[in-house]
Image (cartoon, rainbow, N blue to C red; front, top):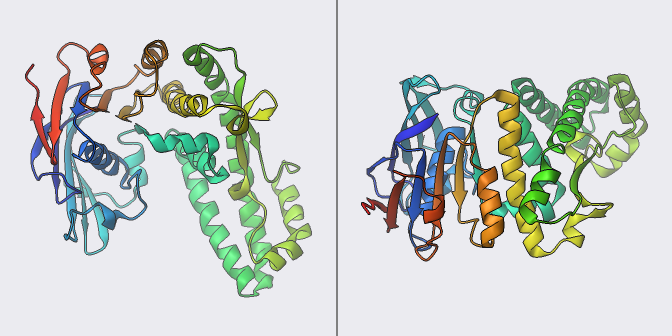
Amino acid sequence: MRFTELRTHQFRNLASERIPVDNRQVFLIGNNGQGKTNLLEAIYTLCYGSSFRTAQLKELTEHSQKAFKIEGTYVDDGQYSHQLALEWKDSKRTVFLDGREVQDRKELIYNIPCIVFSHDDIFFIKGEPEQRRRFFDQTMSMYNPLFFDDLRRYRLILRQRNLAIKEGRTNLLPIYDQQLAHYGIAIQQERTKAVYEFDQIFPSMYRSVSLSELNVHIEYNPSWNTCATEDEVVSYLEETRERDLRMQTSTSGIHRDRFQVMEGDQLFSQSGSTGQLRLASLIFRTAQMDFFQKKTGKMPLILVDDVLLELDFKRREQFLHLMDTYSQAFFTFLPEEHYFEELAQEGALVYTVREGRFTVDEG
């Protein structure tokens, strides 16, 4: 799967123009603030209907504008061409695939699998537990529609249960407890399996790129760690109901699970250096790519945003070898980062980016 053409209108600082991208590798070269990351964001938003930089789509509009549109032509694995368009107008997002309105964003997730590498990925390692939950939920949702549906239903029931707690409608809690247990225990079981499988990939990748023997691995600690069945969860929720009422929220459940990055028996966020944590965050993404390919047999599209600068030559070489399994890649580089030429395959498409405009480098 690859995009062959992109068009944006009133998106961030990007000029409203057609950008041909029919190549496995597309390099965007320019100084900061010129629009490189904005194009990556446009691609991601087109793939998933949401941004990797903000939860508010209104923030993606060009200054002083109240609407934007992104369009893309892509070729699927069967070499059939498709038209995809996303428009934000009157505070509403509308997505069209081949002229048909997409009613459920879930269809996008399985349409164009996309993985983004960014500086914010370091929060997978040293950030709040929510960051790691989001990473693993995203990873699992990319290949498992049932997990995605269960997660949606769980979040809906959780909101309803929390509202009932706040409004004192305790008579509804046994019903919500049963539903929460049903979807929650299924999610817990899937997370347990996924983390085990992910941990067969991540530690060896880290050792390979870091050129060290550090035992960096993932541990999953469920909130309901003493429960293995729906009935056990329901009983636990009954036992802890007074605590929930006192705290005015659901104090246990898969929304409070913890995924921890460990070095031996220590938290890696405490034992690792900044460089080691940064490297681990990059390996999270390459492991995600490998995990996705093992699960689906497909290669994702990747967006790599200025994350290679901090790696020395040897580690960069190892890292780039690991991340070569993609259908299409968009890379951003500063003009002084000439090492991108080592990465570029023959015929790669190179753009110079200046003030939101993209000029093909004919050299």
